[in-house]
Length: 89
Image 1 (cartoon, helix red, strand yellow):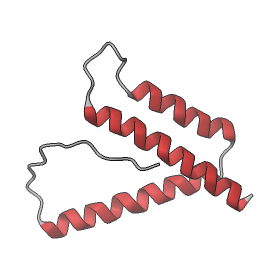
Image 2 (image 1 turned 135 degrees about the vertical axis):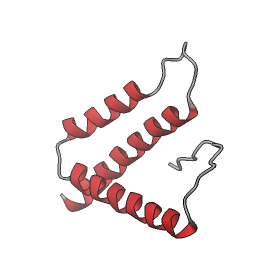
Image 3 (image 1 turned 180 degrees about the horizontal axis):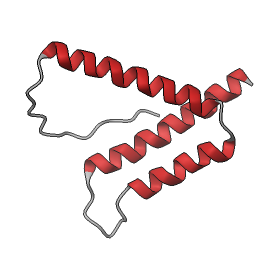
Image 4 (image 1 turned 180 degrees about the vertical axis):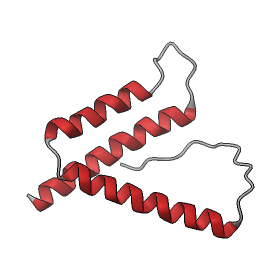
């Protein structure tokens, strides 16, 4: 499953070096979280999916692309953790 980020007006005041450093930190944190979730139980990973649904706005509310994307990323990370748990188990 490929998670495509929403288009966002990203005006920033960070240098290219700062952005590269920030991206590498986010990647490291994501991989760390996936490893930690893989060591958890199926119920804990299911809780991540529940929280992802909670993060997304209700269908009758204004749809915030960033919140929708955040929920998609949470689901994707929990799915990756489940796959890693199977490989390690």
